[in-house]
Image 1 (tube, rainbow, N blue to C red):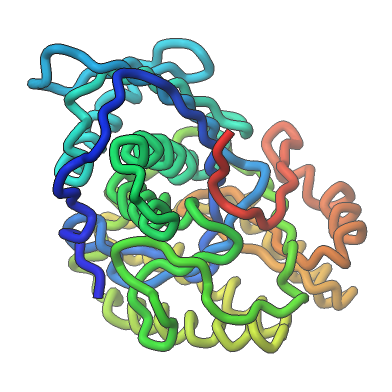
Image 2 (image 1 turned 180 degrees about the vertical axis):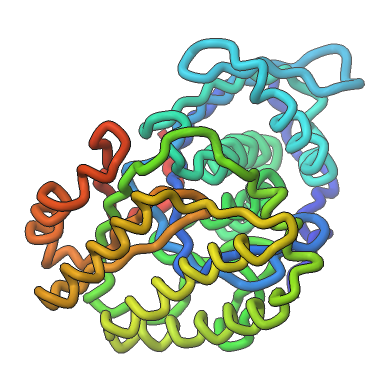
Length: 360
């Protein structure tokens, strides 16, 4: 049984003066939603996500040994330009992970990061960003301790990413990732994401996700505030029970390939997430009128054509349109004909299931 203490290193066998790494890490879209957390970024319920392929963050980390080891020292560049307003979030991340990476104050870091998707496009960039940064830090730890195994490397990277942004722990390893303890999924844990350990039917191989950008503005409510609203939520307990049940259902669905049942679980989860926000105190409506138009248009199209296309939502207005690869042409035509008009400036992003973080 893993504990957080297992990730605290004893000593390092090697030294290194300077160097650099570069990693890409993808965003992910939860099918069973994580909403509500305990101390230290521990989820109140388990979740499962599709790792994306094209929507990712690419982060370069340069490091050089320094004399003064009293404080953290780093420069942060976003798309090659200094980005001061990101720095407090990175500093907080370093504070949280220092006990697990005791070398952090020994170096000056230059973090140079960019996204392959438009900034503020409403795609979870904290997940991909924190995962990419965690991979870079683990690459440095592996130089300091070459005995680290691959399993330990990826588990600890996911563990560290979680301390920056909960859902980031699902962006380290691909295709389908479970985070949170679920008794019927072996190896599942609250501490880090694990690749779904059972058979995944060919119906779900290379599943497609087209993201419709309904609202590209700043999030109306931050994830941290949203999660906190679950602490005194009247329906929180029932929601957490439902998440466990839905994850059990999806485990069976992934094996038997039943796309119709997949659609029911995934759409219900998306609407439940928004229902929890609407019934919290204070309460929020995160959908926009065009979000509802898209959902109703998808339902109508699915009823009339039997094409197995469905939607999911994050905590915002944008719509992820999910569908098997074998109906890709039909769905993309439907999106162009009937849904693009509901997108801000007609913008959408075509993506599919991907494989997780990659060293560049």
